[in-house]
Length: 287
Length: 109
Image (cartoon, rainbow over all chains, first blue to last red; front, top):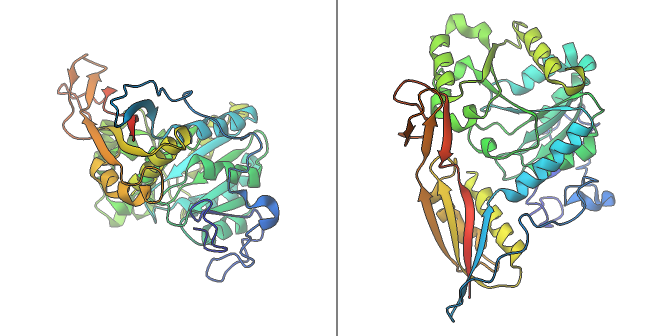
């Protein structure tokens, strides 16, 4: 149910911005609640090419055997078919515009927002960086990104533990990133649930911070298996920790043989230029 | 707890396809490498179906084992847990089965 007006359209998902988020220091809640009743409340995806309701695999095969009391209807359909279909639309929309969309995932506190702040300040203009922020509550992270100079929308998932393709479609409609730019979708901090939901991104980037310990790829294989790039963050803290980088790399390779690793520190700037280069190299129009 | 969203996806898919039918049973296939825990789906099912045309329906889940093939030596094997490593030491492994997350059929009362 929507916390603001009590409607039960989208299980409490809210989209804030772009604009007006940086000054919002209160409890991180948007000042005017931005509940956009005048824009139709966007309970569907709000995405212009999302024109209506489609069935995924054709009509149900309800010619099943009839045993009198009940009949069997064969569906044979993926549980995530609806999300996958919407993700496909997002991907096509992004491809038409030559936009690189990165699904950025990590546990809470690994440094996603801090790295994006630095990225926005140092490379944001050149990359045309825009950001979709996903958190259960508050616009705190979007405020930080906006202060760093990038256009951003905040999606609050309410009870949800991950972003899905429909939320990203709403974010895209609100943000409208320019052709040839880089869009980073900062997923809800969580190493489990976001792994299952395709958002329509071109690349999946997972941040593993050295303070979390080296064993995360083995503990959360589903997340790391899908990664195109792993950013090993907070490497400025390595002298104070017993983090075994060789073991981490070997464990990652056992889960995801093709994932690249880049060590970075958003505090000192170590390795960040390689990250900016990676973004440039993967942007379709500059490839 | 993405199983809540997954289970909601099951209910949405069934009500989309059969909006007026009273559903008495839902059958799912969940693979060992799908990233979804069958017990969690069972836990969520009654909660999520409450007030829908699936309310009171029985949930039958077939849990399917994983099957992998090593891309280096060609051996087919069932992985021991979620990390698929071939006995030859290679991690270059294709998942042949076990990623399923599928609604196979429903019973309409």
